[in-house]
Length: 597
Image (cartoon, rainbow, N blue to C red):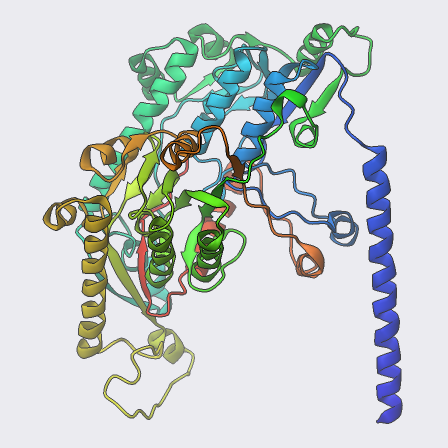
């Protein structure tokens, strides 16, 4: 045994040394490569924004071992950009005399509430500021509705001769697996409050209820109306003209898109490149023109665009993803982890105000309340301003209700003030393959959490009591936080979703606007004048865990075709199920996921 242990420990030590040397080697190579590839911006440079990524609200995880990860797994080094990074890069480039123009290409991808219309509206504003000083060129083999939110305002909007533009309108297609559960012997019992709290429907039925169809139809109509106004203003089309295109054609071929003015010109890729070469003073025979990617440009210092510095800080906090109990993952809002972050800001005297950017459909009721408690405590000492992204509903609204002021975009999905419980059991499935359970318990309600059988009437009644209590608390908190009468809140609640522009009329939102307007308001009510700096959270580091986790991962589908979309929908449903970890199985979450496809 001693001999074995000696051999084992010696082998282990050798392995550690080899891994350490390998990592150090990659770090050294990475640093050397970084020095060699230092960004050098020349005059007449075109800024390149490749849009084919999932635009998140917050900057994603920074992995210092990205090079090693790529070597070991063939993955890593994601080119994804956050909304704030894109806006900061565009604003900086607009002031940089070396940047001559902006070039856009690629198709947006939407995952985990990324690339949502609210974020795209904010990026549109930054593109507008850039366009006021310099031209924007955009080319692709096809433009989606999401893409058009960004490229429709381009100075020169091009489409490949074989391309098409998606003008099909919006569709919400919730996935239902109630019949599949029945077929395979999985039963889900539900408890809920609210006529419109339809988040349980996918588990128990095969279609939308009338109430759910009503609220989704209204929401789609509001978002579609806003989309028509935005695209129409850019392309000088009336909403009625866009509606006619959607009803009669759905998608536009290149010649049709040019005829109605959705694009400016039909061009091949080489023709676009030649135009950019000419713009930058190059010849067509030259291999390339001066260019820099938006991602690399973020590391460039521009004197006139340097961030202000001050001892007074406005802290930006991003709450993006499903709200879950515990710490959560990088794509979730952990009740414990976000509460800790807020607690640190509350106790930091240099932080004079907090701006909470919410892009969440909700989730765990317990986690939502933990976060809200920290918001209440912060607000007693310093202002809290909420900026709502694409979705800030149910639990997402729960954590927003006690802020000093709430900003939302017209197409923000909010409200959904309601609560539900999900109680699955696999008795029939297990019995069908010969699996049974027996139990001994010390009380009549001792097995309330079991998956081995359906809940009894007494158990269901007790759980419904808990759901009713949490809903009453939800109503009370919204009433208190928003200074609305409880009876009125209950009337507009019932689990119903509202668009941002409708929420203002109801008093659930204070003002239309994005993150920039929310920051300006936080500065105003903090009475800081010009003596402040804005602090964005730094993404967590990846490190060894990131590397070893990646060894067992496969590349996720990130395409834009129909089959990739099916894979993405299934993955999103699995992520939703994995996020259902409330200790009491009670949730405050919206009933569906919208995707601009």
